Amino acid sequence: MLLDPFRRKINYLRISITDRCNLRCRYCMPEGGIPLIPHEEILTYEEILRLVRVFATEGISKVRLTGGEPLVRKGIVDFVSRLSQIEEIKDLSLTSNGILLKEFAQDLKNAGLKRINVSLDSLRKERFYHITRRDDFEGVWAGIEEALKVGLSPIKINMVAIQGLNDDEIESFARLTLTLPLTIRYIEYMPSGNGEEWKESDILTIPQIKNQLENVGKLVSIPSDRWDGPAKRFRIEGALGEIGLIGPVSSHFCADCNRLRLTPDGKIRTCLFSDEEIDVKELLRNGGSDHDLKEQLLLALKKKPERHPINTHQFKKCQRNMSAIGG
Ligand code: SAM
Image (cartoon, rainbow, N blue to C red; front, side, top):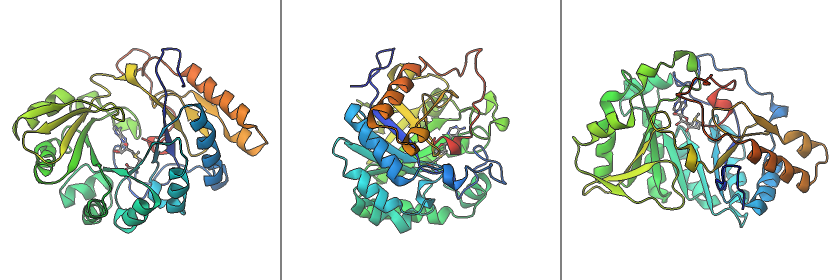
């Protein structure tokens, strides 16, 4: 079992397999993109698989693939299939913007993926275009329908709620849960990514979101299970789907943090908001043993901060863009 100095049990690795993305969401990336990590610096699938196998023997049992956009990386289906065969990994999931989901949903399901998170910040075609700078709301929606059809479950839709951008769609998203088995998760806007634009006043806080949700119906709390992340779970009375509320800014949940992150270029990050990075690529490429890799994992664990610095006087924006960390 992996325990950090604050006695948190760490069993979750979020792996960003690419910093490339096929959207340019305003709050995440500038229109022209960001400087990309050179291809040769990006871990190969073989290298990632070796790491996961080694870390799994130490206690990592939950893996999420993210990016950038994970579905733009070639060979993703075969990679998922090989990951899903690692016995100790009990929960394998993926986070996508949904653009390529219609094309990949069935193959991913066949490869062993059980569930998926889709990021979607608007249900309105024109607004989707405004936020993502790409005109493909229908493509994402078709991807969600395909994921439902092939039986990926649960399907969680992540909506970053931003004042003046999509705050008037809180209720429309919630209404989707009345008739569809979707989990709608509202996430507070965090000071990361294209952070020059971030202002505290842009945050729609979880209490504000909850107030709006009461207009749709009575919110009934659902007890969390062991694979739940930081989301507080609810159901609108009588609804098929669920609501999740994630408030990293208004109420940090660091005391329950169980995760480490792996960047596309082989650095373990101890927290989304810390620039502390522990390199594993050198070892992977220069004959490091499994024991050496485990040592790096333990070092990362040791350096995991007690909490993120948002809302403290120590806060400064982290050096990497969200797309190069994996949100
Ligand atoms: N391309 C994939 C996707 O769209 O889900 C994975 C990467 S994306 C960076 C992961 C998530 O981070 C998305 O849901 C995105 O909305 C979220 N995100 C990016 N910047 C954010 C911010 N400043 N605050 C909150 N969430 C953010």
